[in-house]
Image (cartoon, rainbow, N blue to C red; front, side):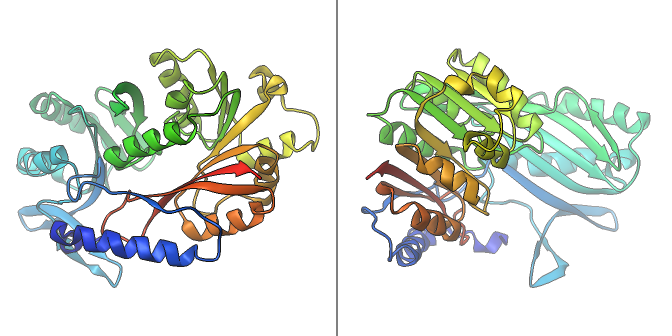
Length: 364
């Protein structure tokens, strides 16, 4: 997304266009009225990545248009990024501009921020980072007391203080705390994430029993939904996310949630009766879990056939989708057994064609 595409005065019109496109795509399905959750029109992204462009003594943040990938677009401020990222952008360049060991061969800077004013700054280099870099970076970090710095070069990573931030989300007036680790998946739009969590709690208001969650990440949904269910077992393949989820569960005082490191395809195969339950699932108590509901938040490819067959057996399905086309295919496959009773659009990525969608399905 180019900086000039972010036009807050056009946000309402662009959101209406997205709504029309989503309704048109889903026109052949039996769906209730679409609920639309809009984003803040600016400063909504809690993370951003920028290339660093060097021109003589000058250096600046840059982005590239896919139609002209060789020409840098200078970015001094980025309206999509959080207010904190915009505050840090010029301060960081000013601080490193006259320090050769910090600016030489620097080719990218990644920012990860929180709603509570914390920031993680990763600096990526086309040169080995060494003790001289570390000493200069420590002095730099002293100028940014609310920030955590990381240096990266080929096969090397230096963490000055820590490689994560602690985010706090407010959902229906209650605060939830999450560790968010560098380069691990987190929802980029914190405001929309809070609305998604509130929606998930709303649609499960009448639910009870056990919840199975697949693709649970760092426990983003698992932790608030633990208040709705007797037990929650989440599965996730990324080790970093599993570790964060375990920490977040303990930090939020949820004693009825467990996370298992396992690919969704393997979980589906095991629960569909293709062989004995793996040890990890047995240790988590999956053999005694009788899910009344399942939550899936798959990647853009949607649910594989095995997972579709698995969720078909469960009465209530919460499906969070980042790709309406694969969602449509999955809903068509589930239409004989389940009916969509809630249908929502979350504008996670304003000024782009990307749409985040939520559906709640109940057995017919």
